[in-house]
Amino acid sequence: MSDPLVGIVILNTNRKDDTLACLSSLQRNRYQNTIIWVLDNSSTDGSVEAIRYQFPQVQIIQLTENKGYAGNNNAGINAALKAGAEWVFVLNEDTILDSNAITSLVKFGASNPQAGILGPLVYHFDEPDVIQSAGGKITKGWQAIHIGQNEKDQGQFSEPIQVDWISGCAIMVRSNVIEQIGGIDERYFYYWEETEWCLRARNSGWHVWMIPDAKVWHKGVQRNYHPSPNITYYAVRNRLLTLSKHHASISDRIRVNISLVKTFLAWSLLPRWKEKKLHRNALLQGMIDYYSNHLGARRKIKILE
Image (cartoon, rainbow, N blue to C red; front, side, top):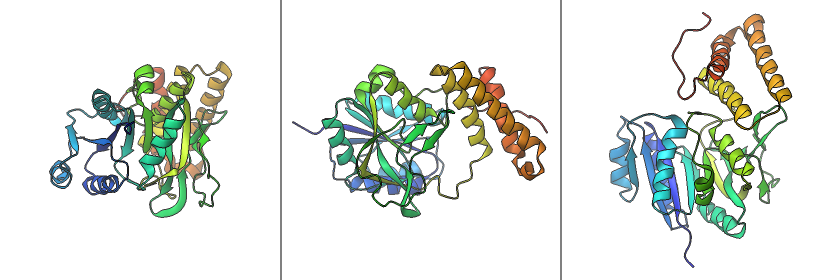
């Protein structure tokens, strides 16, 4: 019996060097039955030419419209399904894979037919033995948090564990799952979309697993990472969207909204948070846009001078 086909999807926007490094790590991977698509989001740094020259076997899809992480990756996901991939592996362009990563994921999936979504143990690229994500969980307050974040790897994740969600920097999804529940919800545009995808799979009876033998190093979200106001916006709006989409209780929705209003007031009134002005505005816009049903890409509007 042949190894299942894995369709690998990488989104690139003017990150030529990172994408080439990611492709080099894939070239060293021991799992052979793969097709790689790079989705190029109108790059102007010579990415397409460099990829074609160094990796002629890689298929490039040149996007004509920026639909964010969600919509852009769906173009590659659809291409992988059309090609007959049994697994679709969505990767950030700034990831480096261990040579056994794909083999470990596919092997676990083959032995666990209810495993619908799999993810590796993700480390900080600049601190190679420090964990960035061992999968994620949803708290009682509907916060999506990474398990094991910033812990030094001392073997605490030696066995696969079931989790609520997998980091979108490296998420492998069984094609049967996508055919059943659909692709990434494009209304999210960016942030929370992989979390919601995993929740949708779990609600349909599939299991989500983190596989520690599969190792990936991610350059983004370093220990000293400071989110931009854009992240605040999408985090607020899409968290509220997830509450609604997954039928959170009225009491949970009230608690989350009260928490957001308290944060808004703190960032508005307390002197020690005066540098949070742009984040405060983003938080307010996120709430306004959710309740006015403005989804997709963030609008450019003036709010609270």
